[in-house]
Structure formats: structure tokens, C-alpha cells
Amino acid sequence: MDQRARRVADAANEAPPALHGATVETDAVIVGAGPVGLFQVFELGLLEIRCHVIDSLACPGGQCVELYPDKPIYDIPAVPVCTGQELTNQLLRQIEPFGASFHLGEEVTVVRKLPDGRFFVETNKGTRLLSKTVFIAGGVGSFQPRTLKVEGLERYNDTQVFYRVREPAKFAGKNLVIVGGGDSALDWALNFAQPGPHRAESVTLMHRRDGFRAAPANEGKMRAMCEAHEMQFVVGQVTGFEESEGRLQRLKFTGGDGVTRVLLLDMLLVFFGLSPKLGPIADWGLGIDSKQLMVDTEKFETNVPGIFAVGDINIYPGKKKLILSGFHEAALAAFGAAAYVFPEKPVLLQYTTTSPKLHKVLGVDSPTFD
Image (tube, rainbow, N blue to C red; front, side, top):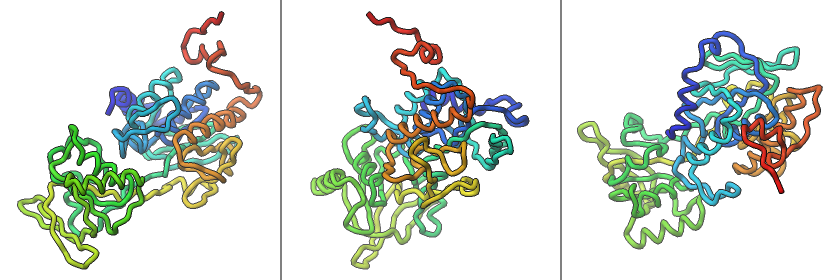
């Protein structure tokens, strides 16, 4: 974990006892500390809207940090390339002036609208908040990797069987079998097969068919590396394993021809995608379509006034699941929330380039122009 993210996590874990007993009042509660949730802090901060951020993960960054912290991202405006961890670090730096309170490693269990229009929010660890607005930025919800269904294999989870890569260096110099047919499987297969600090001793990619749900360019790279004997690809499905002295030694797989074969390995990486679960969100009375929250496109508000949904958790005509789309949604949602937080005050659009007020909020000196 980066030092900036660690400081946020440590501060959340050292929250004063009052936060876990009394009910704390705030302007906004953001459920989800991924990139879109973090940028929501920024957009609310510019409007002087105070917020608390809650996330079930132990550190900010969401899927970008939890699943692929070192994977490059190329479509952030004005940033040619950055990793998920680097993007998170920069967002945390950007929101520092606003002093948002973080509650990490906590899951929201209750969201109840009160007669005065505010929301009572409670987590599984006893944090209780009274907020004028709620923002759901929970990505795909509570997500868990889909697991490989082979009896007994689960006892090697996180020692020899992995469903995500947190420390690429752990796999360097090992004999790897990578199972899956999507982008994650191909990305990591290529990463570990190519020269570099994380290069494996051998990489075998396995998929149930000779076709992929991945970027064609990566599939082409993989096939070229197989032809050059830098890695291998096999069609098949894992059906069993052999162990010795408490370690996974061989993997049994059945190919398309019905023949069962054996592969030697040190570690097994499985990428079958994520199984999204809305969890308690499904019980909050929100409009749901295909496990996503329906919103308008004016301010990304749900069917419950005062509750907004931004990022991959929402759905509307033309929705595109991109980080930059979530940033746009966060900006409009912040202005939509201002009507609830400051009902008697008109909220004007100001520019960070020229507004002395925003410069004061950001803690920067106002520039002078000739």
C-alpha cells in the first residue's frame, strides 16, 4: 500500500470513539472509495459540502487497487499512462484540502430516510451518521472473484491458488498455470511471460475453448509468444490435482478431446471474473435494473430524492463503464446535492482557474494575470 493510502487507512482505523457511539451529522455520505468515490469528494469539496466516505475494503482505491494496482490505465484525460495505485494516490492528494473522514473496512448496513428528509446511515462496525445526502459509488457492488470449483483446492487459497495479484514479485521465477479467457488472464499471462522483474520460470495459459473475451491485440501477442516457445496455451478445464507433502504439485485438466492430462506447477492463478452482489443496497428501496441503480442524467439521482449513484453502479441510456464517465457523473451529482445541503442558497458555477473563493477552499494562492 502506498504511504498516502496507508495514512488514510490508518486514520480511518484510529477514528475517535465518538464516531462509533454517537450519531455524527454531515452533509454527504459517500459509499465507495474507488476513483469515482474519491473524485466525488473533490467535487463536493469545491461546493463546501462536508462528507464521510465508507468502504468495505481496507484501503482506498476500489477495484483499481484491490484487483490490478500495477495494471496501466491509458484513458485518464491529460495522463498518458498511470497505474491504478498511482491514480488513487493522485486523487487522495487532490482531496486533501477537504478533510473528508474515511471509514475503511466497514460495510453500510442501514440507510433509512427520516421524516425531515435526512438519512440515517449505519455500518456493521457501529459507525452512525446523519446526512443530508448519500452518494453510492460502489463500483459493481460488493464483489467476489468467481472461484474454481474443484473439491479440496480451496485449502491452497492464497498460498498456491490465487484469484487476484496483489504482489507480482511473489510469482517471479515460478511455474505458473493461469486459467481464464478474459483480459485479466491474458494481461497477467503476458506480464509474467515477458522479460522483466516479475518474469516467471514458465507460464501456461488454460482456457476451456480456443477463443477469448479479451483485447484482440493481447490475444495476438499471446499466440506469437506461444509460437516463439516463450509460453504455452492449452485448451481444457481443470478437473483435479495431485498433492505431496502438503503442497499442490500437479494440476489435472481435461482437454477438448476428452483426454485428461497433467501439468506441473508451483502456483495457479484463476481469472473467471467477478460475481457482483449489491448486498444491503438491494434493500434500500432504490430502482434496480440488472443489479445496477437507475438514475437520471441531469444529476444522477436515484428514485429516492437525495440519494445519488455514480460510476459503474448506475445505469442509464447510453451508459459507458469508464472511469472518466464516472468523473463527469460525480461533477453533476455534486451540483444536484447542493440543493439539499444549501436549500436557501443559489449555487453558481465557478472555475478553479479564476475563482478566489475556490482558491481559498483549495488552499492555494490566487494567481494574477497581466
